[in-house]
Figure 1: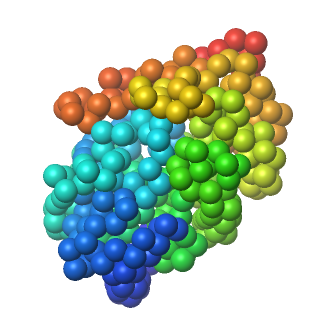
Figure 2: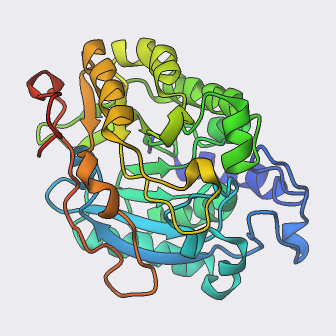
Length: 336
């Protein structure tokens, strides 16, 4: 976090103005959230949090040995039909999990006290203003962890620029390269262009992924890409577009954990196959990136969190190969 509190406070005023009418995300639904209305995401005046924990299942530079201090926000501005966090991402879940900004600040501080390497804000976009206000309170009380913005990639450039100097590490998804797939999966035909502009801006702001002597990320960009069945994710096209960022040191996490709930549209009704996943992994390997994390194909059932239990994740470890993809045997499933 590079900005001083007084500079963050100036940004905060602008962010709250964008709450009424709400223009925080590219959907620009216009809800008057300061006056009691809720947006398409379900978000209103108060932040809404479903879970707060030391997460040991993120990529190694984020989880490290002490865990990533993760705050799961309720609701979502994108609303993918196949969301693995469907218990908390639907708008109906928001109201029952609302808390005060002051309480949110205490969560940040407690995660730091517990020894976490960073503050990992999951699906934060629709609560950008409230999060920044909570950060101001937390910083005033000694908070100093690197801040991770762990989002869907469906972000406006305006909001990203307002978070410049507040967010240290950008960890966006890149879900689709094709507007038709984005429409089918997220009712967002503009997603590919929006995400490209967002990722480009994030990289301009923060640059390549940087780690300390212990291998823990301190700044930069790492994009997550989930391979979808029938190449709905446009994975090869995405790698072609993202290759220059990889060459300049940005990170990438290639994921296989697509495990859709029941009742999905036919195109999203099954897990990804080895014939769909491994060619993408091979293509990534050929790009020889400095920071690449490749998920084991057998992990499709591992990363479905249950937010109705005290143990949100059954599996603590993230089944990813390390950044040296040269040693991966692409004829067999990737192993840790």
